[in-house]
Image (cartoon, rainbow, N blue to C red; front, side, top):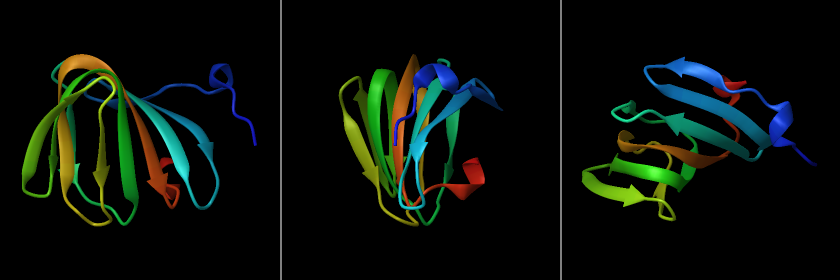
Length: 106
C-alpha cells in the first residue's frame, strides 16, 4: 500500500522524457514524467482515462481539438480514447494518473 520514491528508478523513454512508475493496482496507476524543454509527448490515444497535474514547468497540451498552455499547479483530464499530446515549453515534471493501470508501462 506504500510506495517510496527512492526505491523507484527513472526510465529514459527517449527524446528528453523520463518516466517513474509510482503506486498502482489493477484499477489505477500514478506516474511521474520529466520533460526537457522542447520535448514532445506525441499525440496518441488509449483506453485509459488520464488526469495530469503539472508539478513544475510549462506545457502546451492538446486534448481533442483544443490546445491550452498549463503550468505548475494546473491540471487537465484526457477522457478515454481521445487524442492528446503535449509540448514542454519550460523544463518540467508531470504527475499522471491513469485508470485502469497502464499495463504497457510495466
